[in-house]
Length: 577
Image (tube, rainbow, N blue to C red; front, top):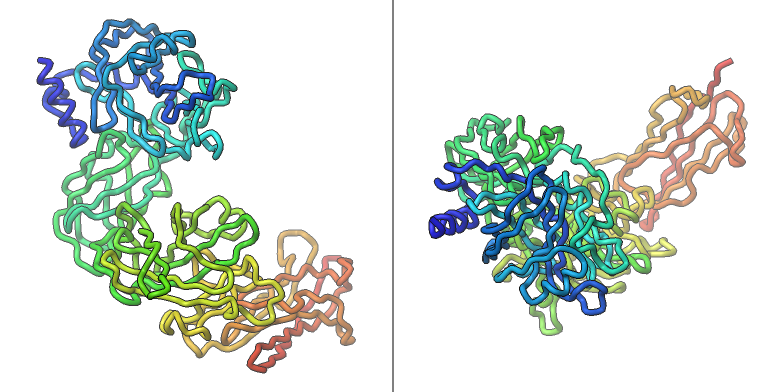
């Protein structure tokens, strides 16, 4: 019997699928015990014992004997061999045999021969009952500490709400106990923290031409996830004939199609009926693209924007763009610098695991996503990818390349800070943007500074200086010829929408009254994008109300080529009487 159970557990660990012996036994212990505290990185300077431990809590209403229970990290299994009764609402510290005496001074502890090691950066820890049924699983990351000092060691990770046993990062954080942790008693961060958030599909990747894997942001209910009727392609005739939730975390679903996917075809899927572990139904974040990846060739993925001189304390970024018709797996892409003898160095994979970039998509690489979001407008967080060690981008001039997995060049640039718009007084924190996808990256006239109206950077979306062709005409359009700035919610602002024929223009907008007197300097010598909008609130230069009447809007623009434009328009300011 024991050999059979061990075999079942090993099969489950390797495949994540139910085993014959599991189907014969009711999973009465599901989430009866939960993992509530982890100590991946002990430190002798902490006030708790310098030994890894896993804390369990009995959240059921019954006494549970832990003899035969197992803890695994996916590669090794530790088994509790002694009989121990854990009372309801009680804690147990599971630690190496040699540390039991030390932990017993804090709370109830039991030694486990073969306790799996807890990795500092990331690990998956699973708890199984004697029958091999999965009872609880935690896939943790050191980012869960939410504290850069504590994640360096000497502090435990604590679960916030033991009854919210399915949530990941949202229900864990570093211990707030001054000793460094709370082994064997209620967590210092303990509070109600129910999971009321719907699951969201994050991405897809491909196993083969008929198998796609969907990745979600939290554990799913494996029963609803296995229902093939919840997956529909919106743009092809393919159907899903098999859905297998991937254990033990059930954050991924492996889907088998009735027919093979074709290269250079983007398949769009919508997901319905799916619920997370807590029973929340999937909501609006239920759409995902997938497709057969093709090998990237030269100029398929291009360098599109660089921030190489960030503000003090800031971080560089690199933006890539897929200008091809291919679906490309980012694990086949690297960014690199070049040595003095011309060889690639500091080669950094864009992503170590499968991640697809689709035609006409942007991808932003940075070492600090939080800093980026605090300092630049980020339209789509899914377009941002954090890389722990981005190749160096010097402030004055440097080199950056995109290469494939065997070192073949895809795109490259030897940039200079002299490529910035020459009239900028301060080039710090200003991104350099590519103007035209079809012009080589090393052509300096194909790059210029991001527009001030775009916050001097457009990370992860279309450049402010992007030019699709050379036929655009410079114009100034006033959306409504009459506006009434009376704060009634209707035409309170006058919107001046401009579009330039090419990047690199400076511009000013001045408002004149009917007598030709300037009353408001709305924009003063700003670096303009290819298009943008400025709003006027009907106030003068001293922010006082202006009388009703007709006003002249004059936009003056010029560039370093000596081109000057003056664009005039008019608008009527009205008010209710």
